[in-house]
Amino acid sequence: MRGTVLFISLLIPLWIWGPVSDARAVEVAPSDASSNASSMAKRLDRLIARKPLANASVGMLVVRASDGATVYSRGADRPMIPASNQKILTSIASLSRFGPSHRFATRIWSNAVPDTDGLVDQLLVEGGGDPAMNSEDWWRLAADLRSEGLRGVRGNLWVDDSRFEAPGWHSSWGRISARAYHAPVGALTANYGTFFVSIWPRTTEGASVLVDIDPPVDYLRVESHARTAGRKARRRLSVDRAKSSGPNALSEEVIRVDGIARVGDGVDRFPRSVLDPGLYAGSLLSHQLGANGVVVEGNVLRGTRADTNGGSWVSIMDRPGRAVSEVVALCMKYSNNSIAESLVKNLGAWEGAALDSDPARQGDWTSGIKAMRAQLGAVGVNLGDANLVDGSGLSVQNRITPRAFVNALTVARESFQFGPEFVAAMPIAEVDGTLEKRMRGSKGRVRAKTGLLSDAKVTALSGYAERADGEVLIFSILVNGHSGGSAGAMDAVDTLAATLLNSSIGASAN
Image (cartoon, rainbow, N blue to C red; front, side, top):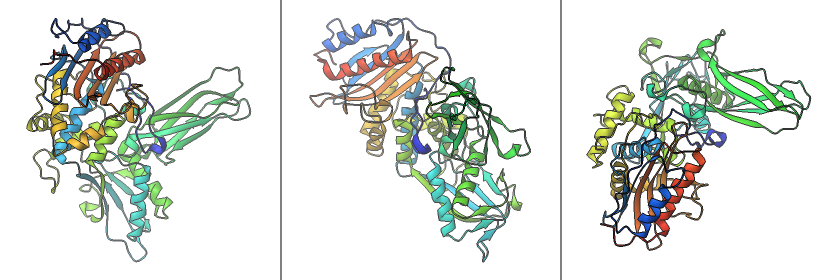
């Protein structure tokens, strides 16, 4: 998926995911609709025959929810790159495996209970795979620790994020950038592994620009060479990040700001991702503890419970995160890659384990995808020959058919266990999420997951459309290798979906 906007105050992720690699265009197969096609089918065929879809591989399936009858079918069994429609499968598997009310916990340990002055020698934060802890949550956790009597840490704050394999990126994602949608996946994270850099020009030409980091943690150190120039200069700013090579290399990253801002221009804001989500989260906890009057005198360092303090730790807090239903809603509404991949790794970690116990193993992509396939099969989703690689859809190696998506959407909608939560998590046309500014004229009548891989020329839209007569259509539209830019392709897909609302189905549905 491609990166849209991130989120304000690092609270809500608002991005559409971005560039990956090129996809090869495949010749469009003729419509599977009969020669006596309905007016809807004829309109859909005509729309697909136009640019930017004319030379693309287009797979589309539409069925009636009331009886499962096929309304329209075109390349419905062709495996295609799904982009962020992959999150439909990740969300269904997670809701069905964990249940809507399950919460992943973050645990706080100390070397001993706080002494009479409220002090401990060492503090350790253990990530439990909660993917949705933001700055406000970390402040609340710090405030709760203070309310439990903690007043200071004489030594280090340790970060234990060993619940998942080492934080990182999937090998199939290609070149990794500092963009927010490329955040590494870890068992302990803050703000989805991202932060904001804000840059203002000065009032004097030649002066250094003003740079602000949100959140302002010690882990992120700014090195700025950007300058203020006159109004005639070309505005160009770049923000990147790199591992530190300084004396604090183990506990900081360098944020490099270069370029030119012009006198009189407004603020420029850049969402960026960290290299190490665990140390970033630990630094944010240290910052929020300080904001609550609890001073950490030592450093933020990585270390597991087993390998630090002789393995002797006392539990002082077990903090449940958001319910899985809310986590899935954040993932689906705003197409959050970090959440999707964390859910996959949680599926792997908990495979075969009771939810009231500890995970069975360390979470990784291999075990997670295996568990995801098994869970989807257990609830009746027929994946066919689908190739699942990751949970977010960033990989161009994923291959799924429109029929598999329609089947999954049907199963989810009919589920008493998690159906209401899943449907509520879908973006709503002209209302919220990644559809907030799309599908004009269809307000509230379409709930669907978007998908976009700009560089791969992939766009997708799968979900539910409610017609004026009350009939609900379940649909999946996958486009690989469209011509032109992403905006035109998204508009074309939106027009296909709107046609489901406004055209006569006719008698050809069967």
